[in-house]
Length: 203
Image (cartoon, rainbow, N blue to C red):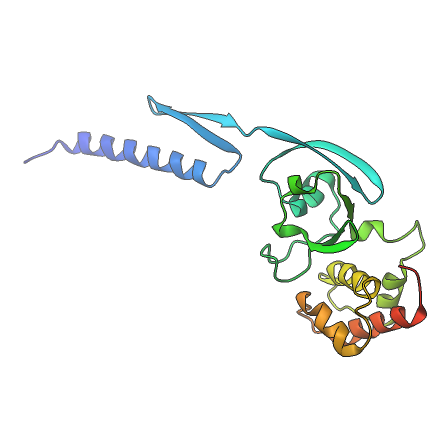
């Protein structure tokens, strides 16, 4: 059966147009589709949820998309970029923060799950110009190379000592194995932790 090529071309363009619109929505998580009508897509904004918590000793109160991770909230909305975005799968440890004094990988955590919690990031360790003992030890022992993983390493190192896990080099290595250093500064990292643990510094 013969089909007018002009009609076929128009139908093909219409199909491609709709396909592109659907694809754009699929890869844009900030909108929901309400209806398709007359080739028009009507989006609905995602509802915001209220969140309150303490960040480095200061109260934070804001409204966020319910799907926001703590990592993205810290970096992209609050502007605390010391917490690094690495694998975003909870594997590399670059995004490690403290929640109520315990270490946590922020990339896998929905921010709304931390209502009223105490959050500490790398920015909250130092007191003004005075470095935290672990930060100072990392500098002294040259416990980093490119530095990308360093904030997460330090946050884990602090809880390693605080939780009494720094009793030997082997125990430190076991505790720190969730933090990856692609540059391979592991021995110097352990040296820094050993130094802080032996110093008896309150951390």
